[in-house]
Image 1 (spheres, one colour):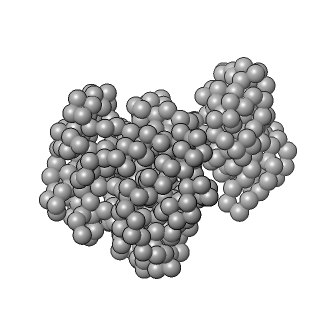
Image 2 (tube, helix red, strand yellow):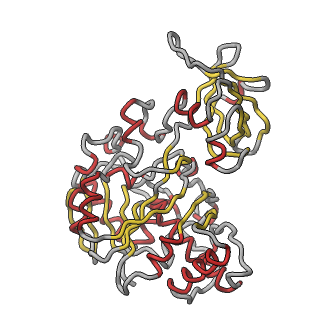
Length: 409
C-alpha cells in the first residue's frame, strides 16, 4: 500500500476568527466566487457561475437533506444532556427509521454523558411551551466514541415528525453560536430531498432558482447523488501525518441515470462536482466499477470503498469501462440505483478519475477537505487561499465559494 506521506502541518494557514462567516448573506447567490483555471485566479459573483461553465458540462449535486439531529434532554435531577443523532441503527435504513412510529434506535454522540449513568431521559421542554407528545431516551450500548440510544415516544408521530418538533439544526461548532431561526432555511440547499445529513453540503448553499434556471437555459446537464454527510466532517486531523487519520464512513446512493450521463458524455465534456461530498461519491464510483469489472457484473456485490483503496495499485481502466460495468450490474439485478458506503480520502497525489471541475467553499486549516483541494490544484492551493484572504472572502460553511479547474498533469 503506497500511502502518501503528507504532514498535516504543511496544509495550514492563518484563519482569524473574524473571517469565519457566522451568518449567511441575505442573498444566497450574491457571494463571492473565486475562479481558478490554468493557474490564473480571478473573482466573480456566484450568480455568474452558469456563464463560466462549458455548455457540455455534466453537473452533479448532492441532494441530501440536513435533519434537526440535536435533541436536548433532561434528567430527573435537572441536568441537561444533549444527544446528537449520527446514523440509524434500528431500523438501519434512513427512510424506514424516519417513518418509524413509537420507537427507533440511533448511534449518537452524547454531550455531558458522564451525568447519564443509567435510567431514562425526558425531552427538554422550555418553560411555557408544550410538545403534545412524550419523548424519552434510553441508553442501549456504550461504544468507543458514541452510544446506541433508543428513543420512545407516543402520539402516533413518525420519528421525522418528532425531530421536526423538538430537534435543532446541527450547525457547525466553529460558528460559535446556537442554532437560530435563519438556519432552518439557510443551512439547507434549495434542492435538498433525502433526509439523513447532520451537516450541509455547503457548496450547494449558494444556489438559487435563478442560477439553476440559467444552467438549464444553457443546456448544462444537472444530476444528483445522495451522500449523507456525517459528523465526521467536523473532526480535525490530529495525527502528524495523514496516514494516522481514520476517515469516517458515509452512505451514498446514485442512480443508473447518473451513471449513464457520465459514461455517455461527449469526449472532453467536463464533470462539475458541486461540493466535496459529491466528489467523494463520484470518485468512489470509479473504484467500485473497477471491482465490478474485474469480478464480472453477475458475480459482484457492492462493499464499502476503503480509505486508501485508490493508492494501493495502478488503475488503467477508463471511466467509461468502470461506469459501464456498474450499469451492467444494475441491469442484471433489475435495479435503478446503486447503494454503498465510502471512506475514501482524497489527498495530494491522488489521480482524479471522474471530476474535472470542483465547486466548493473555503475550508478549515489542517482538514481533510483542504487536502482534497490540494489534490485538485496542487501547491496552488496556497495562492488561492492567500488571494481569498487578501480580497476579503468569507470562510467556511456560510462563507464564499470557489470554482476550481483540476490542475493539468
